[in-house]
Image (tube, rainbow, N blue to C red; front, side):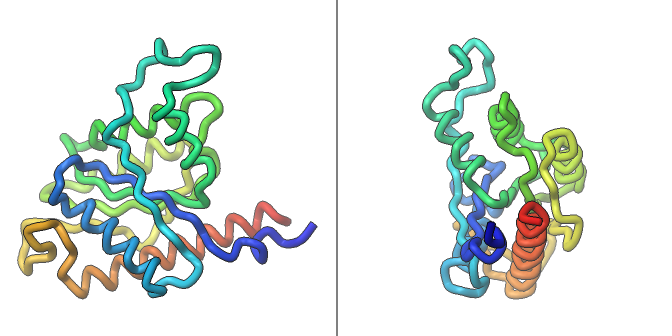
Length: 198
């Protein structure tokens, strides 16, 4: 059997945003990351944002004969097909946001769609780092493999201004940090793929 790493010419990453705000800086980080992938700043990686805002709240009564509602089935399928996951989310009350927790819970229903997925997380917020650390803790149970470094925390209220009024990234230092994290995610993903093929 040929090397899976050699066959994997493009790493497919799905992005999940933990904010519902239209001008969310976390969504702006995802847009910037997608642009880096599409404009060849990162060779061999493509990223797609999945809209998780329309997922119903987790309710096992919606599971019928081992199947899930169509939106949930589609979401779970995209997670399974992805090579890696990119989270961009603020901190809510020292934890993850409800929209992220709901997505985590739906995709964890049997069979666990998160299993063995490499991942990275960026947090744009005004307070603590607890939300990202809680997400990483949840990832341990769900078998999500987060990259450890570089960590990506941004205090959105400290100068200089990092995002415009539409939530688009305008800070070049932050853009470079984002690039470094995405390159680390790519390298880690390829390493896991290589390990599976051996």
